[in-house]
Image (cartoon, rainbow, N blue to C red):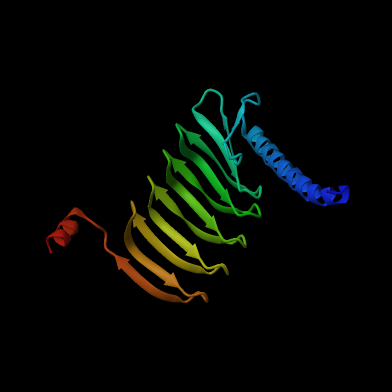
Length: 192
C-alpha cells in the first residue's frame, strides 16, 4: 500500500479512538466534579463501574455511597445515594439536555416521600407522594401545555376519594369516586 492509502485508513481510525478516549475522560472528570462537590471527605476514592458509566463514592463514617450515572453519549442520567446497596435519599434523573426528568425520595430501595416529574420542555408533568413504593395521598398530573390533567388520591397504592380529569382547555370532563376500602366492604366484595 502507498503511504497516501495508509493515511486515508489511519486518519479516521485515529480520530475515532481519540474521540472515544476524550469522551471517557470527560465523563470521568464530570463524575469526579459532581462527587467531590457532595463529598464530606475529598480523599475518599471514587469507584467506576465496569462499563465506565457509573461512579460511586462512599461518605466517611456512614454506609452511604453517593452515585452518578451517564449515558453512552456522555449525558448525566442520574444522581443519588445508596445505603446497603439500595437507593436511599434524594434521587434525580435527567433528560439528555441536563434538565430534570424525575426527582424524589427513596428509602430502602423504594420510592418513599414526595416526587416530581417533568416534560422535556421543563413543565411539570406529575407530582405526588409514595409510601414504601406505593402511591399515597394526592397525585396531580399536567398536560405538556401546563393545564391540569388529573387529580387522584391513593391510600398505600389503592385508589380512594374523588378522581378528577380535565381536558387540555381546563374543562372538567370526569369525576370518579373510589370508595375507601375497609375491612367490612373488602369482606363483602370477597363474599359476593
